[in-house]
Structure formats: structure tokens, C-alpha cells
Image 1 (cartoon, rainbow, N blue to C red):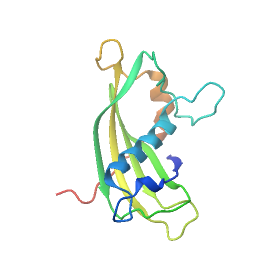
Image 2: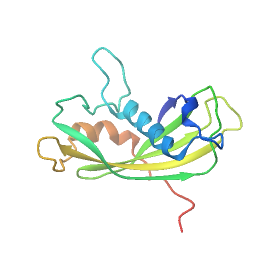
Image 3: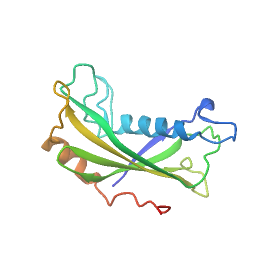
Image 4: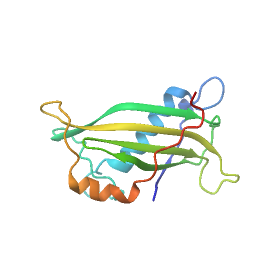
Length: 156
């Protein structure tokens, strides 16, 4: 099962070549990851996977250990939000791999796959900075979204 997160593009995401700048791609992935995995504010609804407490004073923080992006086609400016599909490629002791595929907006045909990416998050105890085992509650909630890791096609 995958999580679908619609992310609108901003005019400032584009460069002189009229497509999403490579540095902005990291921001798009970050925005989707926050919506999918960070607990929403009190009274707000969120995805079933949005369980990480990212508020100031949280006991556990998630840090990025690695990111990889494969650009398949330039993303042109579109007013409709792009569709970011996300799933978990691996859950380890203290880390998980979040996988992404960025597609053209829902309803646009033909459906275009623009980008594949992967982010490794490590859970860390905020007070010590040391890795912390992923809680069983999180493993249980995230396990329905566990699939094969993203397959990058252009590796040498």
C-alpha cells in the first residue's frame, strides 16, 4: 500500500531552464515526508502513518542519514499539485527507508513518472544524540506500507 501526498509547486521552485530545480526537489520530498509521517497539530487530521512527534521538546527526533534522487524527466510548471507516492522500503532497528515516486497531477494523462527517490531516516534520542530503536507502535502502523525498496534504473 502507498501513501499519496499532493504537493503544489511554487513558481520559485523553477530554474532558468523552466523545470523544478534539483535543490528544490529535496524540499518537495521533505514536504511530502512531513505530511506523511509527522503528527499533525492538535485537532487536525493526518495520515495513519503520521505518528512522529516533531514538536519542540520531543524526546525522539528523526535525522536524515542518506538521500538519493533519480531524475527521469523534468517537472514543468503545473498549477495542480504533483502526486507523490510514498512507501517504506525497509524498517531497521533505528532507521527506515522512505521511498518516493513523483508523478504528474492526479487525473492528468498520460501519467508521467518524473522522479524516484529514497531517504534514510534515523530515530535519535534528542537528549543524547544516539540512535533509538523504532517503537513497536510505529512498526505496527507502518508495516502495511512496507514494499520493496525503490529500484533506481540509472545506476552505473
